[in-house]
Length: 208
Image (cartoon, rainbow, N blue to C red):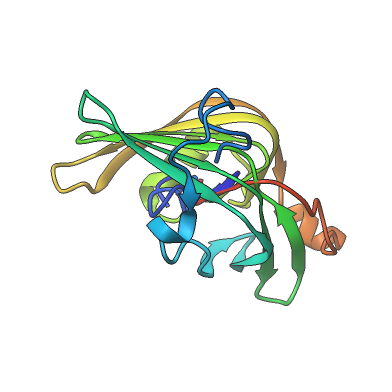
């Protein structure tokens, strides 16, 4: 559903894994639509381009032709906040040498539960994952994710837990669930998989 850099993939925390960071059909149970609004009403720069290091190069992510993400934010009685993402989103990935992966579907569902000590981010496929800082990189390597630092969750579900300090700065991260088919996207650049791949209704997790 989204693109995640783990805490850079749902909002600023979800883009970039930052897994970023959508529910395809309704709320957590796929039935409740109340409270969802276009994502740009809550996160104005959600669709903004982002560049990061991956595939031994610089990769730039830009929104594609499909931009239909919605978000719902719920304040819970225990003091945590649940942020849900749903809706279709495609992105274009361009490597510094000009290689392109075009209209990649990252419309998978995404949910972030955050509180004073950190956040748990859950992403369903299709989603995009990439690390953007040392904390995310350490978690990425520990989980055995693709060495090129750019991964595509074709199907299934992944979950990452992020711990923050008193100022809200991430100090540790751990992938606690990788029940998914995960593809090394760096190989796609070199195979020429760049034209209208998986165009359609999907979500992305930016950052993770």
